[in-house]
Length: 184
Image (cartoon, rainbow, N blue to C red; front, side, top):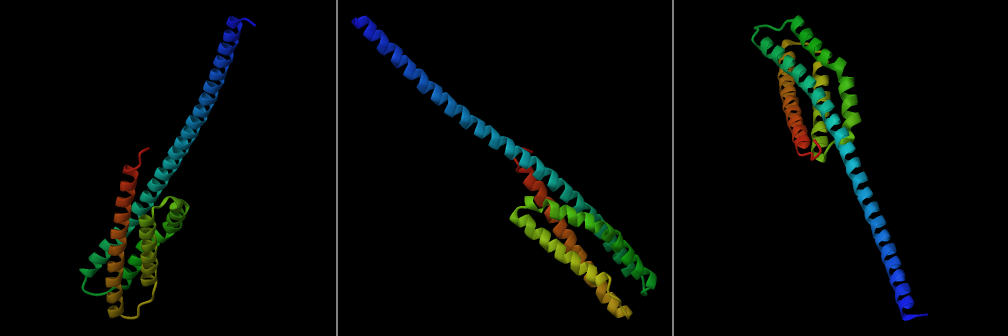
C-alpha cells in the first residue's frame, strides 16, 4: 500500500469516527432537549390546572363571603330592634340555609382542588371549614329564651366575622400564588 493510500484510509477512518462522535453527541443533546421540553410542558399544564382550581376556589369563597356578609347585615339589623321576634331567628336560619344549600358544591370544589393547595392555604381552608361547622352548630340550635338567643347572635357574629376574614385572607393568598406563577 502506498503512503498516499495509507494516509487516505487514516483520514477516512478519522472522519468517520468524528462523524459517529458528532452523531452521538447530537442524539444525546436532542434527548436532553426533549426531556426539558416535556418537563416544561408538564409544568405548564400543571400550572394551568392549578390556576383553574384556584379560580374555582376563589369563586366559592366569594360566594361564601357574600352569604356571610348578608348574615352579618341581618344580625346587625336585628340588633337595632328592641325585642326578639321569632321571625328574625327564622330569617337568620333562612339566610344560612341559602348558604347551606350551596355548601356541598363549595365543599366538593375545595376537596377536588385541595391537591393544589400550598401548606399555608390548606391550613387556612381547614380553619375555615372548622369555623363553618361551628357556625352551623350555633345557628341550628334551639334557643329557649331571648337571653340565650342574644348570646348566640354574638357568637354567630363573631364566628361569621372570623370566617369572612379567613376567606378574605385565603382569596388574597390565592391571588398571590397565581401572580407568582411563572406560567400565569
